[in-house]
Length: 383
Ligand SMILES: Cc1ncc(COP(=O)(O)O)c(C=O)c1O
Image (cartoon, rainbow, N blue to C red; front, side):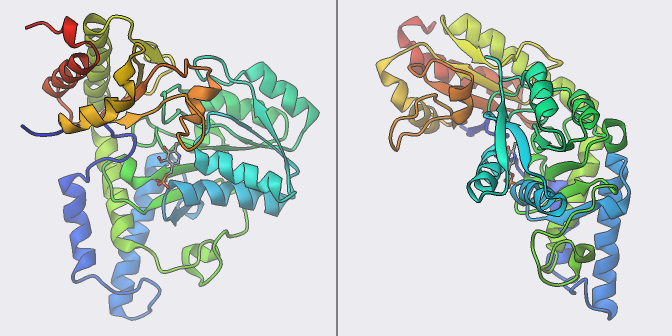
């Protein structure tokens, strides 16, 4: 029987049409885009077409898009370079951010460049915006970094509102949009933020390529020094095949976004309902039943306490279901999820993250829940 892949927040499979678009750049179109001869010029022109496509889909101009090696580099660039370019001395983030943001800001603080404040989050993982205002009033001209939707529990904020709060206090706003890019439309002009990021492997593109949007009014110094690539903003020969694949994946995602959203949201709702029916005592982390404020691709589940919970992921794996673990325990090397810890999830309960994509089917959801229910409560499994 085919394995079931429900770990799409970790990475997604490359869309066959994306692979097709990339192939020529791994065969005949091998020129270096910085070379001025014909081989180079042809590749350069395809690279710029990809930039134009990404910019169009975000409502940005091409001069505001910089290709990177992925979401982590884009986050690091926005954070470190806005701090150094503007001499910012204070930053605000939350304890539930991805480590690409949290560890970067913690390092900036350790190195003595900034003081870092954490905005309070509630039990569903939403930042307390009154607390954000309080922090900003005491520290105008801060960097605010708050993600659009959480990669572990899916809690999704109103980025335009947070951006407005930041702007009202003369702050710079960066949002880690890695998990929402290509799952929702993003119009950078309408949001008004300074930095936003994308990572191709989260939306059926290749791994190792992403982009950073830098608002034209928020010019920053480069993060990676070297050649003049990316208009002197990111040294290093461009990953052309990856960039072409990224743009193609973005184009495909925007063509039928509403249809996929409906399909994937349907799978998530189906899984919630089936889990509630088949596993008494199951709980959900975040706010997954709120379709407006929860990322439709992610479902984080806490299971009733059981002696076998340590083996849950392993047992699911050997029965053909791939998903992620996320426990709140944080002792020793068995370090659990910092997100579940921040929202004070019960550390004695095993947590699993299921994440979906357009390729998943209702049959897969049904089978995954049956397998899980059989592992967790074999005595309750219907014949
Ligand atoms: C919210 C978020 N930010 C950043 C990243 C890092 O992206 P990348 O793997 O492209 O470096 C991830 C990947 O898991 C993510 O989920």
